[in-house]
Image (tube, rainbow, N blue to C red; front, side, top):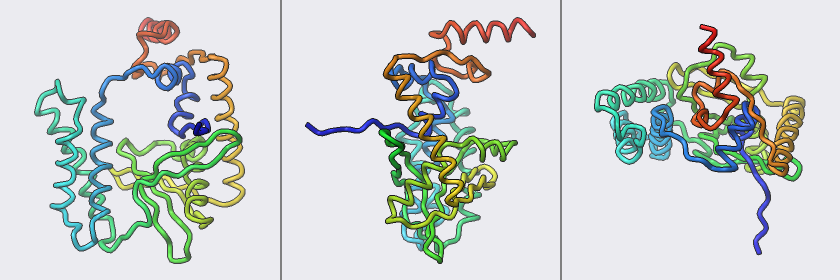
Length: 260
């Protein structure tokens, strides 16, 4: 028999931290979710950038990027099967604006070390891994890990730097994946404005963040072993796909409506 080690991802850890009940519905019971225009847009922008950056630099024209984007939309748009063509056009144009900004800001001779690379590390008994959008090599041999974001740039950058769970996993995972090369920083690149949230990586930062990731991963495993997933109502209940199944979430939203 092939032994498989338990694993999780930064996004799953974040979901558990936001609401264990929602984690249970999504990743233990694996209940289906509604298609999302935001997810379609994000997936298609990511796919276009992946395919474009895999081309030789001389082939990376604007028309080539636009073709890659249109090809992605042709095969992936589940949220728009019952929406109008005007809505599809509106969301598609949001992505075009992001791609145009990215192409204008990207050096024409950029040759990433890796594109859409799975990286991860072991945290106690649990592997935590995720797929990074890009890894660049700096002249001194150190690495920059870049994760594209299609949402809005955060108003509170400091809070993101303090609470983000993906950056330390990506930094440690890239360090281990690329033969111990040092990681200089992790960047969250918000494509709508080309602004970045930057995490400067050093030993002290990595050690501190590793403790937080390992502790949370252990909590998730304990909850799974005990089948203990309490609801944690918050403003996130408004957009939860499972709110109809959650009495606590429904009561929280009813109370919010009653206060208006």
